Image (tube, helix red, strand yellow):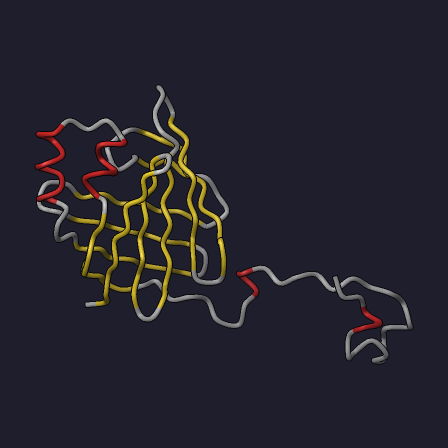
Length: 169
């Protein structure tokens, strides 16, 4: 970690020659936050059926879920580290509110209640671990990342990963 003596302002008035550690900036201190806000349309989806299989969803329900989730409408509102995400399909609408770095309650893709903890993986990606409130099941998580004007959403269940790519409407 750099110290004050290696920083260009090390000999600036008021430093009195003391060594001081320069702390890394947190994401909330960045000059610009990534802008996830907007409405998003899904462009592609890979492994959604495989994800549902890994979660133990039966074949008939998977067929309905895959058809219903083929054209989700996603609305994201953002205020710094605070997010509201609404995902609407023909059979189900989910809404989550959270602040990055703070736990919140939500449901897994297959509808089980869990406690989630989102963190910044990097300046453009949120990684969220999910812990089931009751029962057993695979380890699940989701990520949301901005890359090249796209929103990349991943869902994971143990070693199965579903990737969905969205574009702004």
